[in-house]
Image (cartoon, rainbow, N blue to C red; front, side, top):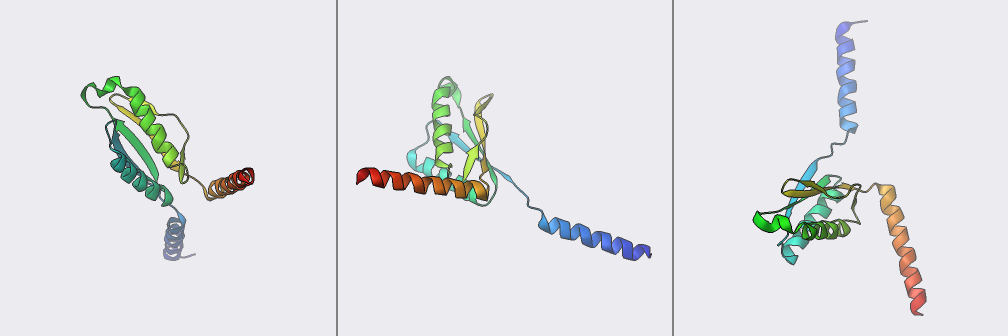
Length: 133
C-alpha cells in the first residue's frame, strides 16, 4: 500500500469525524443582588437564547462591599433565574459559594427532556381546565 494514499485516507477520516462533533461553550452571565426587574429579564432572555443554542450557562452573583452579608438574597436571585430557565435548561447542583461570588451552572435540556416537559404541561393544563368546568 502506498504511504501517501494511507495518509490521505487518514486525514480524510479525521476531517469527517470533526464535522460530526458538536462544541459546547460555557457562557457566563453576571448578576448583582440589587439588579432591577428589566435588567434581570434581559439577562434571563439572553440565557434562554444560549441554552436554546446548546451552550451551557454559568450564572454568577457578585457581592460588592457589604453585600456579602446578604447571601440569602443571592440564593433567591439564582433560584429565580433557574426557574426562569426551566423550559430550556436545568441545574444539576445547588449554587456554590466561591469567595465573593455565588455561582451555578445551567445545562441545556436534551430534546427528549423537552418533549416530556411539554407533555406534562399539556396534561396539567387539561386537568386545570376540567377543574374549572
